[in-house]
Image (cartoon, rainbow, N blue to C red):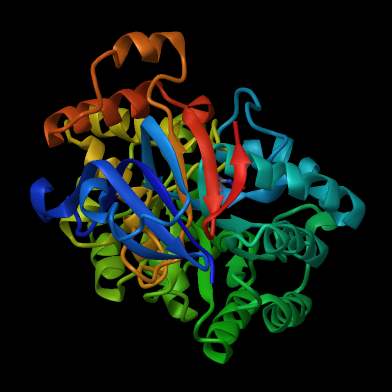
Length: 436
Ligand code: GUN
Ligand code: ZN
């Protein structure tokens, strides 16, 4: 048995700060000790209180840093790693002009193998330890991703994109082949190590009704997999869905009709949802992945966070690289704050960090295993340097915060000004996986 301990300021969440006052939802030790045994959290507490008990154990000490649970990115595209910052188009033209040609490269397994470690390295250097990932339409892109994430012992949830119409021929599968390929990938990868599978129709416009029905069939056959797709991102997309599925009442109703709206369904964007659609997602206990940098970059709109959280809809934060503009969950949280501001809403630093950690774990129904430092949880965590740039050093001159108010202020500086440079180290199951 290996026991080790990490001493620093330590922050996590024990309840939802959208509903529970901060003193009861935020857990903070200005000088804390996180004890890990065999990759799982053994104990968390104040250093002064635990130091005798663990006197014989090697302690890694990070004074002037923070330890947080690893970030959870709730929606990101592996094959779009190389294509951030494609100029000047909104969603549907952006897909045609930039995205589909790049995704075509992932037909080649050697190319997938080349990009997978770059993608995983980017996650880790940004402090992201868990992600819900779309691969390409080619099963080999899923293989490459899971091979690499499994090698790093990361909890990655991913799936093969299903897409059998309204896409170039070179990117199309068929209703039947997408069913068979997804099934084979589920049988091979779902619950292998820490890998989990998400059935992943790209979005309604690129699937025939037969393919969406097959996605529903997969969910019935493998009820502990996830459903992961895009929903109601852009007004032209919504209008197109109406044309393609004239018998359905709404975009959500298209997915609902095929049995795709449930408690393990994650829908990215949801910028253009109607009231009735929000209500349906709430009733179904589905999750929304809020993708603020992508929604502003592609001009999709300002997600109504308050509408979602006030209806108790599970929400997580997502980069949506390459429509999104950064792998950093700090940058993503900062953009989420600005979107809230533009809607006259508020997103507190604690709420934002909750969405990036325990909120993301809940959104994935993984809160028993991930998201905070409760005993028994998987010890994925990050060490953050609040003075990682000259301007952050100037901003954060004062001592380690001892009150929630000061802590909130420090977190906010990181959310607005921080990025991968603030991530000093990333640990997976208690083992160092990235160090600056
Ligand atoms: N909708 C369908 N495919 C995509 C994609 O690749 N990115 C984004 N942002 N939206 C989509
Ligand atoms: Zn996306």
